[in-house]
Length: 106
Image 1 (tube, rainbow, N blue to C red):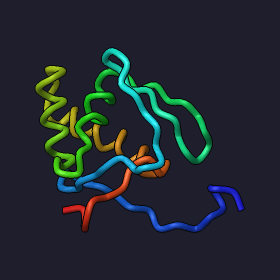
Image 2 (cartoon, rainbow, N blue to C red; image 1 turned 120 degrees about the vertical axis):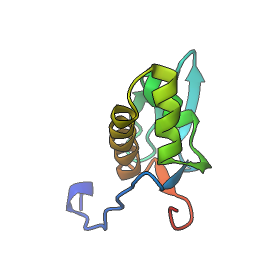
Image 3 (tube, rainbow, N blue to C red; image 1 turned 60 degrees about the vertical axis):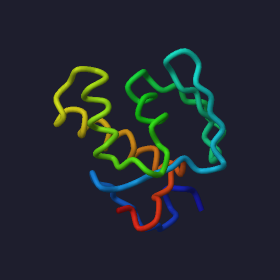
């Protein structure tokens, strides 16, 4: 079965979710960008500066809302825009198996 054919329950995150990087992910910060290797398909991903800030904030303690506030301050965008961007990015990383929800996510 391919990944698309495998039935799996989708975890949906919100502003109260806490996430951490899974142990299988290899990554390094180079300048202002994070470069990581997806363990599932060995693809290398280079994150843009805002995604890199969010990634580096994934400590299992901060919530998605906390990361959104950090990006809003760091990049001088509205909190609403930061929340949309952070939720989309982190949901994609979670769906790829690069992140895990901490505890019950709250």
